[in-house]
Image 1 (cartoon, rainbow, N blue to C red):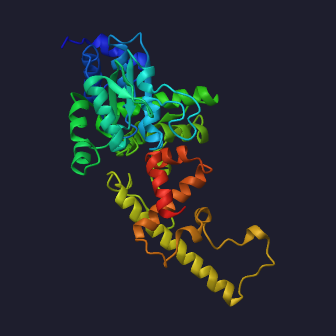
Image 2: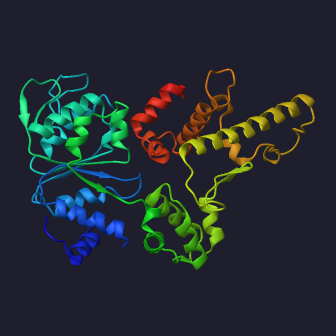
Length: 391
């Protein structure tokens, strides 16, 4: 592979707005530039929110296909029933609603680059069709028996451990080895170190100051130390979200450690996430679900107390409507009929998961795409959970 100088890496970072100078990030950018001229499939791995979407663009722009089409597809956002049609196209009348023939992304991107994000979400049948394209360049449109060919470079990305998915028979082993001819590991935000985190926080603060036409926030040393120690399970996306809120509600202020804690330390009804306050370690999904269940139990107890008050006749309904609020404001977001039903044969963690989905749907006004992103799951997984829990 050709040697890559620092000027070329800097050029790529500036062109795609990549902020940071940690060795792991620089190595990932260098790897993308190195593999760009080599016309092989590339697998980009890394945690959700770490910025994997920048690397296929680098590979495309520094490769021989840069003047051809670049198409990005989020495989997790396309329903299972239509994913083959989206990728490979379909013929008129091939299924209900197919009122005309349609080109798929493989045909549209011919000669260029196709970025398959969340590739682990592809159904096994679609994985088989993808393998055929990778091996021979051949594919069939849905409803057609005519073999077509395409010349597309595939760059795939995932936050899933594909080898583990292979062991669980959720991902084809032959496809995994075909996709991962070349792999690029994108570092998570915490591992990039405090300097990168501080650079990103200041960049986001400047961006949001211009966007909302407000005075720019600054960060105290204690605040920067705190965000450097935090695990950032949502990575750059989570940091950006926090800085946006700080920029809106603390415009022109110097952000303190306490301000940071308000946004990364969750505290509802007596339980909290072990975020920065004590261990600075990440909260895994299982722990979050258990804590959500504790929260739901506390809300259930409040409802039971309210029922006792109503039965005792000690509640004075002559007061103003808003003056009586025995339930905390957070609990008003939960529909107890939907969430707490002890008669249903659901485990405690299932109840907590159902609660989290219902709350996320309410926060996003029923928009399933935004809800899936909010919950950090694919939209197909969200649909399955909605059906499973009869939400």
